[in-house]
Length: 122
Image (cartoon, rainbow, N blue to C red):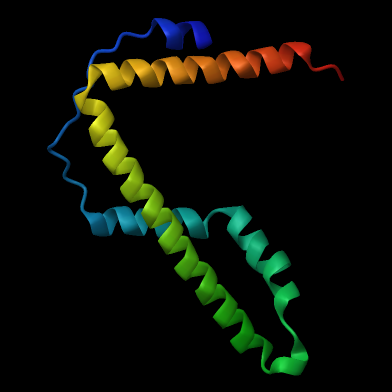
């Protein structure tokens, strides 16, 4: 993979600008993916209740508050990643030179991982 990344051409990538999927459909798809993701369920069932205290009031209210904080922080973090990724994607797609540099970085990462696997003993 490192060799292929180093040898990849620096041609610009053409993207379809005629996307017909609405933002609402994408949002609903994300909700369905999160609801069906077992890691999220395990987090809410196993990890979140550890932060409740019966002496501080209703457990239900505490769980709703903690769940709401989790949802707000998730929206902020994932939204920021999406906006940053979209902005960087537009910058990278316009420049063959930037794609060439990105290919070299990816190749270096793959090469570093390969070397780490080669020298690791178990």
